[in-house]
Image (cartoon, rainbow, N blue to C red):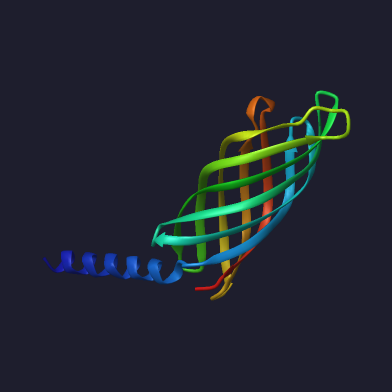
Length: 163
């Protein structure tokens, strides 16, 4: 019985510390490299979210994937996304995933076709809280863009936690 009380106390402390570490409102940005087919380019993104439970949140954002050549044509690629963000805090380390839908737009140069639509996106990442309100880290994102394939991104990011 003594061990059960200790295990229960440790469990409650870990849940309360995770709840205290999660933010009710956060926003940030990322910069890195996107790959589409055999073409690589610089990417950047912005995100905003809220923690609805200690281990899950809702997030929305925008990604500019850069310019890519696909099937001999040049496209500007960007996405808006919304999704769920499961996460766990291990002290100052924040580990998360993303799963949601993205509204992609592949805009061609003058005289070329454009493509847009809705598809899936997912990602994973890790951040380190350098102070209570600011975390920095790295992440991977995958945006499906219809029949054209996937855009993969590896990024460095910073997030400000407001509440």
